[in-house]
Image (cartoon, rainbow, N blue to C red; front, side, top):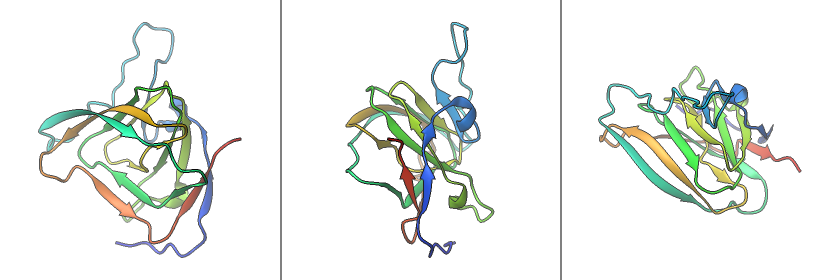
Amino acid sequence: MARDVTHSPSIVHARPLTADAFAPYGEVVAHQGAERRHFLTEPMRHGPQVTRQACWVSRVKARPAGPVVIELMERHPHAAQTFVPLTATPYLVVVAPTGADGLPDMARLEAFLASGSQGVCYRVGTWHHGLTVLGGPAEFLVLMGQTGRDDDDEFWQAPAPHAVVSLPG
């Protein structure tokens, strides 16, 4: 199902990552409130197809200079995916709701700036762009349930650059 993307790329302004702003897409992995523990609900969510929990460390290179162009989106249909930074490097989180056609609704794309002390947990099925490290390189602990059937990732390639993320400063 290809969507017509023949217009000029839209400009999406990145804003600070907060729990409230990110709530439609998942959870911010950071302590909230005054209690000793802040429990997270999303990282262990998964569908019945998940047969194993996977954990790994990913190294993400620094982005090249210039604008951040959004052309490829991904989602994980069976399990939440969590990223916990292991370095104090800021990064960009780009998400989109699912449209009526099942593809990312790029007209409602949102971008967030995460500090090097905030992680993110994408809800099951949330369309997102790969993490874009703003200083880099950076490393992240990644947690995700897997089915073992090679169907844990779905990708959507825009037929043309669809959005450019504007960074403050």
